Image 1 (cartoon, rainbow, N blue to C red):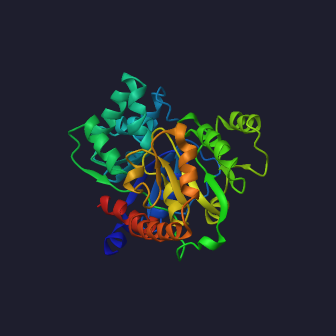
Image 2: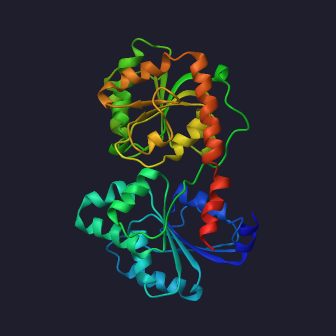
Image 3: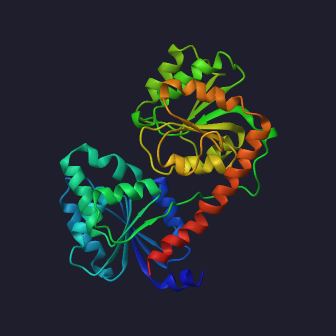
Length: 355
């Protein structure tokens, strides 16, 4: 903790999108850093601590003016720490802008930056490699992603595996007796997250288990398609609920009510939603991804789906678990998150990199 107190006089320049993950991080470090300069893409809905100064830049990859704007903003803070969230155009423009200047740079990679973006063509692959090559310190939130970073750029000198952790953890393990027969999905409605396959699997499962309902939270480009799919499959409003985007407190309420959490993206790093669900006692049903199996062992503290076409069988496998097995899994997952994924503890690891 002493290290954190010593950091309070230092200016930190945080570069990242106006997104919930960046903003949670920003608010978290604001307790320990006196002055924060936040360079972001827009100010929509921003409510920030008083020690944060905001600048807006268009971070489109093809906006060449961005690097000159960034250079001008940071010119008065040379010698400070620049912490960039995401190894995409946010990092590219920023690292171009400060090349040759005396800044300490930390680059926090997100899953899509490393696992998806390099596959979109040579321009994007080279951009990600440039970002990895020009930051002083790299962080990722899973061991798997750290290994992929070293594959992309083997010369990375300093690489830390740290997840953001979750904002709040309940005081005690969830009580199974107050859980409802709810399967919760709260990933974005994009092709990557395979929400359609979850709905199809639920439709097969619910014919034999009519007491269950599927709650589809969040929204996205496929929301209308997913609603139409559920209607075409004959699911009624008592069987499937589309909540739209939820506030943090509303989402916590669903975690507390739901007995199961389901997430089967095609590609992912450590998911905050998964960590939150585990903390609040939702038994996880997940796709077979390296980042997922860093947290869940099949048939031990969750279920790992090997084939989306057989997902309905894995849902049935989950709901057939005994109350004893569910309770033991809830205890195990709660303690795992408490030890490895609490925001207030993990934020200190990021702060220590600023020294």
